[in-house]
Length: 148
Image 1 (cartoon, rainbow, N blue to C red):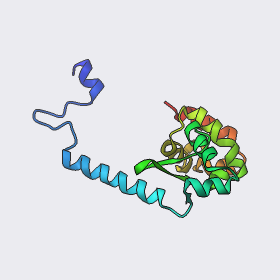
Image 2 (image 1 turned 135 degrees about the vertical axis):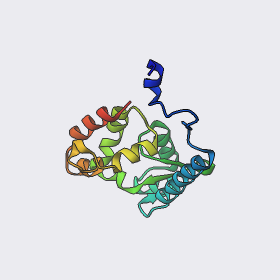
Image 3 (image 1 turned 90 degrees about the vertical axis):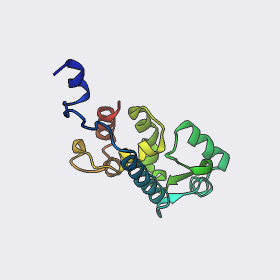
């Protein structure tokens, strides 16, 4: 086997298709779009206006926080956003900017996925739960290990 073959994967044999079909790609993308729509529409999500009211801030301030990565905001079609209500709890509010720095992103979907996925470094807890339980330092270590 040539070195280049080792880098791209095993030899699948003559005529083997190394790529996912167009139909399979469409199916995967549709499933992802459905998941995002369902997650953004969940009961724990707020509009920008509702999030501003909860945080006792002006809508313009909330939009500034979104652009700065101060809050987790899920970008939706037509330039709208949905924000998880739980991020405005004191333990999480203080952790969001630190977490964004550790992950090297302010993308709301990336931040949400990290916070809601159980992690081995956290004994199977989600980072969100670990932060709520006071383990922010451990979560930041997990974020640094997970960042790329």
